[in-house]
Image (cartoon, rainbow, N blue to C red; front, side, top):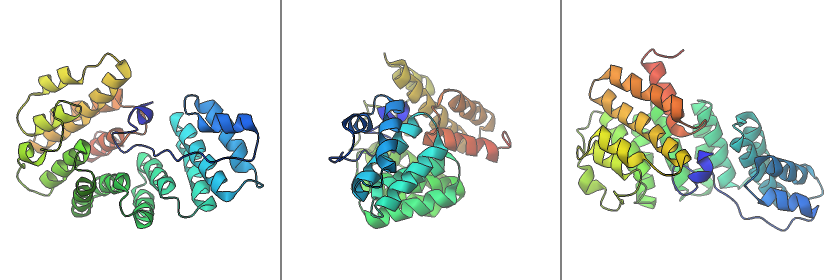
Length: 278
């Protein structure tokens, strides 16, 4: 699934370090591995349900349980597991971040923002939560707040290319002229994905160039990149006033995006705004 591939890229699901559980060894092994979602759910579920286990250990197990469900696109059970993680350990910023991410995928922006608020309250340097909250604000109409959040992400992680793209989108929606991305992106590797999208926004490449750059020997990676192309090129077309092209590109994003990624949610919201979806 894309969220595993993007552990160091777009709004990843943070992985907590595994503690020493005083329970069945096989459950521990299953809970700590992330290659088989069913095994993760089985092992972590047993640990999280065991009232004799230390609350911190139950919190970590519930956190990983949520990841297992998320890998299977089961948002309801992911939300349940991450909510339990915050109950077992109220100061668990990563769990609030992931809980917010799941609500964002469900287009429940109020709950997403509320949980992102809690995550950054617990960890003021939680860049993923600022970015996620910015996306939720952007999609729910809070463009000024979104701009501030994306600025904060770049202050914490200047090399975050996706935050740079979202900031540019937000500024354009607020009526600002396209910025000089070539200067703004001096700390971004333009040769690495999604650098080609930044070049597209900067007017230094074409959609065809970006599609070529999106190709990868791993078909899952190519598919994830084409998801990006559909959404971000769609936003650029929309900003240029070409609604028909934007609709085509957003629909392309829905066709290729993995479930629960932010770009799929955003493309869906944009199509609804354009009257193309209920």
